[in-house]
Length: 344
Length: 286
View 1 (cartoon, rainbow over the protein chains, first blue to last red):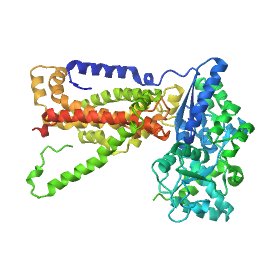
View 2: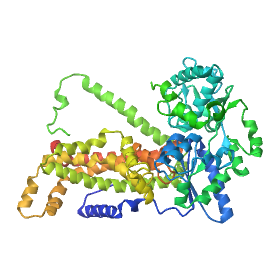
View 3: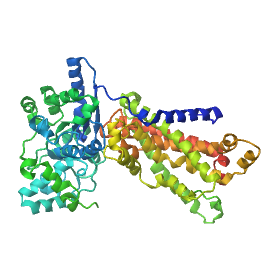
């Protein structure tokens, strides 16, 4: 870059590059040729970054052992709602592993990349593991936050992502709402959730943004967090934090699905099916437990049980009538969240 | 647009004691807002030593991000340079209806948020967009692939070259070109031998700024990227990915490359301003 002097030859060269670029045309600029079935794109939500790094390595090794072929698994992470939006807009995911079923429903409904009954195609409602929502507080719990009512005490600032873009935030919202429901019914729940979001100074787009805001930048007094994300934060940032289990929370079921239209276009159905089935294998279930997600498979579940505190967990189906209803009532445009949340 | 009449030199305004105060204040602000963060970037990048720093840059995903950033800039910047010359030529040397509308249009990308510059392409070329069905059917990838990143970058950096050239070329007028044409030179020869040499330094200046922005752009490319690691993450997006992975050394190592790019741009820009001030702007002659 130094001694860059404009010469005529230089300009002719630049012109040639330009002409070349124009001649190549747009389709030619597209990324490589259509994959020949050896590459998968897994579009996932935010706090699974470390999990899928390990799972992908294990699956690639498994596939190599089985077929002798080397495969590549690409990852994209972000807020679950935002990721679903990208897939709808054409992000070429072979599989999606998102935070909640409503986001995959949205892909089925708007982009028709998979059938509406996708959730019945794999065991356990297509959720190879579960998780829940807990509180992450500073070491020693200086504000004595033990349960949901403590969050709306004056002066407490909560950090939680935006339920519009983040899946974890929707689980957290519903967990809070369910607490209100149990202690006074719908009016009380609505009142509680209104007060709760008044204490949220910012709403980051994804779970990881929220965690870095809380742990790295020191914002807020309590993080409404995925259980796995809370354990990871302690591993990453050292023992400056405590996990608080409230008196009750919600059973979060992050589902996985294969996008039929995309895998057929990429010729990756076999690979993608194998990948999703692999998530239920003892090997993957062990990795899942290691990353503080709650495994489905009995042996892995027993092995990691000590790490998870057993508290009463409401379910989306019993308390909210399933994701379709919950999504429409609470998170759609003009829904309860829009009514109660006023950005400050 | 740049004012052609030079403002009264500040030294003629008599306000004793104000000048040193202002200097002090601006130095403090620059130190706090520019120098300090810059130091932090390099300090964090080297927090775990040189070998960790180099390893972070040698990581395949980092390499891919660097490569992608260079490719995007290599396509977007020449295109915008060509467009800038054409637009400035058009505006400065000819009179036509709608000229001020064209100038406003060129400036438009400066006035809306980069997010919009990305989103328009999603609305046009996304699977649910205007051309979505056609693109999906023919397996043409624009959004979440290189073409989308290039388009978003072009839109954001569109005004840089044109804005640098228009005032200069307007100031120069078209007398020299007219003379050349009268003497029998062809249009191309006139451009090549008269116009281009007259604007070369300003062109280089505009290209520098355009390139710096093209490589550093975050918002617009973030919208069209899809954030596939090692595939569609440019360097600024790679910084975000690593930061969110808690890989702070890696994030700041990548950020240090962007900071270095900024510093090199600044040096070249200053050198240009210093040596060729007269050629950069007709109104800024020494």
